[in-house]
Image (cartoon, rainbow, N blue to C red; front, top):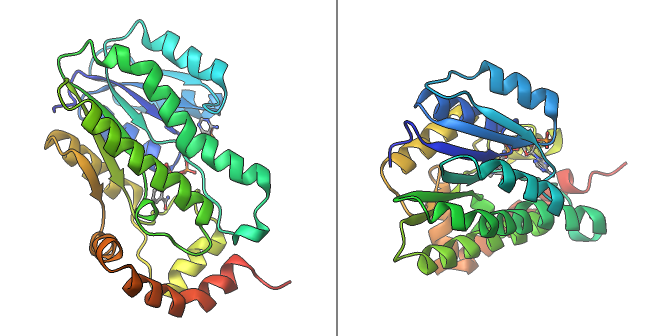
Length: 266
Ligand SMILES: NC(=O)c1ccc[n+]([C@@H]2O[C@H](COP(=O)([O-])OP(=O)(O)OC[C@H]3O[C@@H](n4cnc5c(N)ncnc54)[C@H](OP(=O)(O)O)[C@@H]3O)[C@@H](O)[C@H]2O)c1
């Protein structure tokens, strides 16, 4: 699918991956509808992006709120929307017993419930297009359960399952479903503790622009299903699916390091 001339709704547009996606898609000629909560950051981004035709638009909305999702849908009603990118997300490194109930609820609400509800609301619109795409930004942690990220993993496993089922449900329509799973990426999503932990474990961290370019490639090559970005993470997800005990052993060895960053001693 070529993005040139397409109207695309991008959530989490002001974040690390969101900004890189906005720039990459705008450079490729898409017209964007940008969504996040911070109105000032959205406006700055919207005005700075290259513009091929009609101007980009933006809307400040907390996607965990029903009224805000309805407002997004209302704005989309006037546009020939042919792509929804569910990218907004949140994460926290913490062992489960240290995680506050409200943090758990916030992660499920933003990472899983909001994309499902927003997709449901926008699907009738997308189905009016000859070809359209729902693109869900998941995570390699949506295929590999990782210590210190049990809640985030649960939300991203859920998003992967949702994407797979929806793709099959829409198989005889013009709406495709693509689930892209980046590995660790250098954005504000990751606290200093996460960055330090990745460094100590030798986990690679990608540049957000590199992620955005790969996403664009996947769209233009009409990729469907799940695409895990990065090597050897792609291999690890396969090993974890086929031989989970191998991953259990590897992560058991890494556990003392993970614990050091997830539960730092005062
Ligand atoms: N960074 C990584 O290592 C990594 C790896 C794999 C997958 N991912 C996934 O990639 C996606 C983007 O992550 P990122 O690293 O770019 O995160 P980020 O830099 O923290 O950006 C998060 C974006 O979501 C928006 N947002 C947060 N809460 C929101 C809410 N309630 N309603 C609407 N928008 C909200 C933020 O803007 P406001 O605060 O203004 O609302 C921001 O635009 C996420 O789904 C994440 O799980 C990231």
